[in-house]
Length: 309
Ligand SMILES: NC(=O)c1ccc[n+]([C@@H]2O[C@H](COP(=O)([O-])OP(=O)(O)OC[C@H]3O[C@@H](n4cnc5c(N)ncnc54)[C@H](O)[C@@H]3O)[C@@H](O)[C@H]2O)c1
Image 1 (spheres, protein in one colour):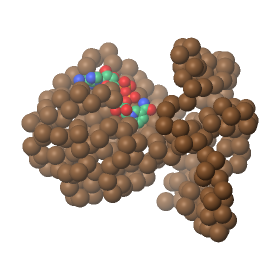
Image 2 (cartoon, rainbow, N blue to C red):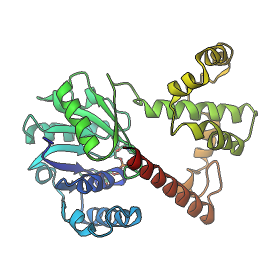
Image 3 (tube, protein in one colour):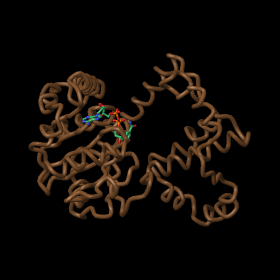
Image 4 (cartoon, protein in one colour):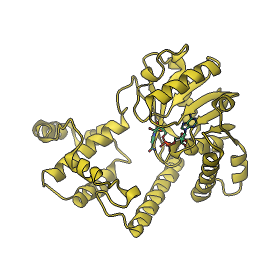
């Protein structure tokens, strides 16, 4: 395909995973962060991920050789045909870096951002070539989640969206193309709508946290990997879903602020798995079990995708 080398800016949670994907798909990659120490950690994480997911048991060294580490953005983008920015979610930082990229890169170089929800229009504001700025929103962990949301800003060209879609497909991912931007794109809007209602059910005293989780894990969630909301509704019968909507929509949470329940837990310093306590107590055994279960299940899905493709 027509995209030359890939530059990944930021070697953190998302950046190192995207660098791994690009190198696995045979791209020459420059991975940029602010220190050799952080880049060293990123390379270790990539090696471990390659070994765990066993996607290149014989040839990890070849994949690793495709990744060059640099600590300057100028060096990172020298020969890049596509730059994917994975810096912290800070609008000012992203705008500053995109101004630099706009100066350094030829106009046909795609400047993609992995932002979770910042506006590509605002990130590209004031650039000489805003038509080459696009969101390519990978999901965490990018090695295991197929979805990448490709989102144009107001001035992004259709050709840049087409080429980004092509690149994402060539990485073995499943791109979803948005017609125009909106906060949260598609995936986070739906994820947060579900979380808002889950919190509401618990706050109203209708059911406990564990029961709400179970109802998704063993119910609706079982269908979701196969049928999204529209396909599910079609298969269930639109007359049925229409009638349920008529009496249930008025009952659902329409909260416009973050949940009080979650706020209280966060204010108590409990942030979930990373702090050892959140909605659940994350004992070392539970942490090990859930991390393993999640990785195993996501890998089974990936294998299935490969067989079906
Ligand atoms: N973590 C997630 O679950 C997730 C999922 C999807 C999208 N995102 C988005 O991806 C982006 C990156 O998130 P992350 O979780 O990987 O962040 P992170 O904090 O893990 O990594 C960011 C990296 O950028 C580096 N960095 C900071 N300033 C830099 C500079 N000037 N030049 C080079 N490197 C610099 C940091 O040292 C750090 O290693 C954010 O926009 C985030 O919203 C995150």
